[in-house]
Amino acid sequence: MTDTQVPPPAITEAIHRGGDDLPFVDIGDGNKLKVIQVDTDQGLWVVENIFQAGYTVPKHRHTGPVYAFTTSGAWHYKEYDYVNRAGSFLYEPAGSVHTLECLEADTHVWFVMYGSNLNLDDDGNIESVFDGPGTLEAYLMLAEAEGLGRPDVVMT
Image (cartoon, rainbow, N blue to C red):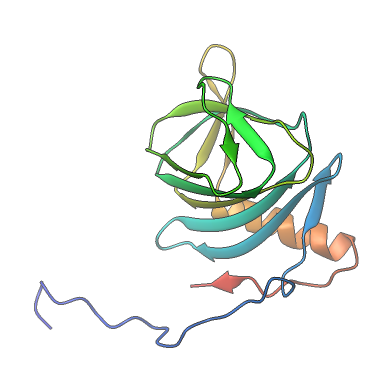
C-alpha cells in the first residue's frame, strides 16, 4: 500500500438502528439524551436530545465542527438572533462560542459533533469538558440505572 492509499475500513456493511432501538435517558427536569454513535478515532459523537422550555446548556465552545438538525420545537443561542425550529439545520464551526436555550417544550434536536464541548465560565475559562466517550459512559450508566439495560450504541 502506498502513502496515498487509504486502508479499507474495518466495517464494510451498513449499521442500522431504528427509532426505538436506543432509549432516551433522563438528564434532569424532563430533558432527555440518546447517544446514537461514538467513533473515538474520529472524535465523532452523534446524539439526539429532547429539551424542555427553559433548559439551558452553559456557554460553551466546541473544538470541532457541529451539525444540528431540529425536528420539533424551538431553541436558540442567546448570542444570535435566529431561532432553530422544525426543519432547521445549523452548522457550528470549531471555536464558535454560544449558550443554548430551549424555547419550547419537547424540542427534538440531533447533533453530530466532532471533538469536545468546552463549558466556559463568565470569564471564558474552561469549567468542564464533554466529549463522545464521556457522554457515552454517562448515557450507559443512566440507562442501566433506569432499568433500560445497556443500549447497543453504534461504535465505529
